Image 1 (cartoon, helix red, strand yellow):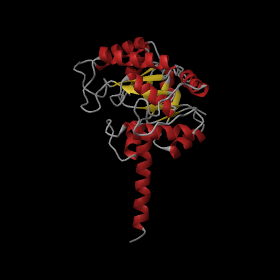
Image 2 (spheres, rainbow, N blue to C red):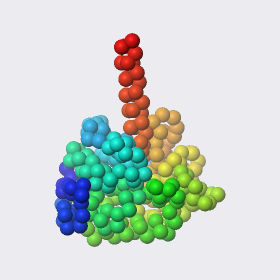
Image 3 (cartoon, rainbow, N blue to C red):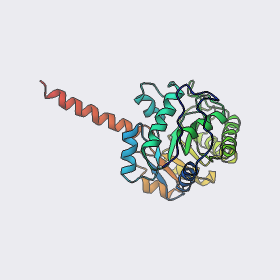
Image 4 (cartoon, one colour):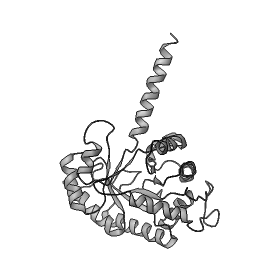
Length: 274
């Protein structure tokens, strides 16, 4: 179980600061990092609250990953860093306390927190890893790759200085947002190489789902790759493994599927009233 010191939602330096990494947090990060094996990917059905996290653990998955969109919606907010960061981190801390496996948190682009504060607050919540994306959540514009690499390097250095060695999954939005380039694959490969050089543990080209392009991307970047999986239809988990993928997550897709099932159930119950 990860050791957690949960700051209040009104966190500020000097009030509720995380004061050091316990061995469980360090072990959690090492365990999560070791799960990223190219060709033998870790599968992470993303969660949004304590019950969904407990269900993922009970099903035998070795780690828990949050979905920013699903978690924000559950808290009554839209995706895109519109939720107060304290609410998001409090929810992550509740999930960490509820499970006995490492938790990696989708925190969009860091909610505009300085890297050292972002790391400190993630550690306080007990997160062993995080997703950080390279487009602006407010505008949808791509961040300059050099600027994003500098940001990731600062996060990595802050994590090392704090003694937590956070597992950093660098999301690449080149297939999702317009980046001003006509070649999304070349842009994504360039970004991936820069992010690995900056200290990222894994790169995540979201919405890349063409098998040939996935295979080419994995071969070019030279490090662990996270692909957004489909709940039905190709490419399958086995196919992604054959491409050398190291991590498969599902973003908000599991939450959306549960919501659809809930809506169908409510429609059936409503029809019985007539």
